Amino acid sequence: MAEGIWNENVHRRSLMLCLGGFVVAGLKAGSLQAFSILAGGESKVTHGDLKNWKSMPDLKGFEAAFEFLDKKTLADVPVGKHAIEGEQIYALVQKLPSRAAETAQFESHRKYIDVHYVVSGQETSGFSPAADLKLAVPYDESKDVMLYNVPQQYTKIEVRPGQFVVYRPGQAHLPNCHLQGPHDLHKVVIKVHADYLAARIKQA
Image 1: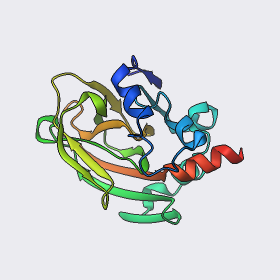
Image 2: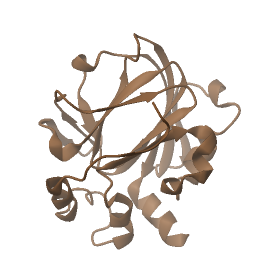
Image 3: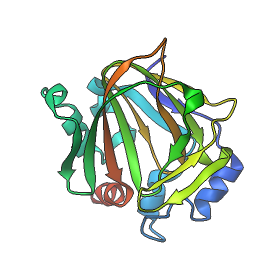
């Protein structure tokens, strides 16, 4: 699958949910900077090779996250949680088997943006605007997650070693799924707080 930036048509009801406050939950109310991060965010996913991250305009403000991923010793970082900038940015290093999409559920977040990076193995990551999905489990604020049933049709993104996908609030995703059969996955998921990103963009 070609690298670069994914674009889907913006659904009116998705945009109305954005304007109605869905995507600003966990952000500073009324913050134009925070909203600008997510404007159109339900309809566009950033996907590409790590080697190209510095030239991708959608990654402005993500410097600390991608500098962590760009470390030559990344493959040796132990499994578990690693602080980058406290709870504002942290990494979750994972080793796990891929799964069948029909056994999983889509997820989305309100407070944090996800950067999924594959160190080894390969996966299919599903994507859909959250507003287009049927809610299965309501939002859990303590875990910053809500879950959805898997629809018959959704965008499928192939993610191979050295590639990443960024999922923002309002973007439901189905990571860790089989790609050309099962694989053992070595991944890093960087969690970036949306308030942190809004502040970084405002300062730039």
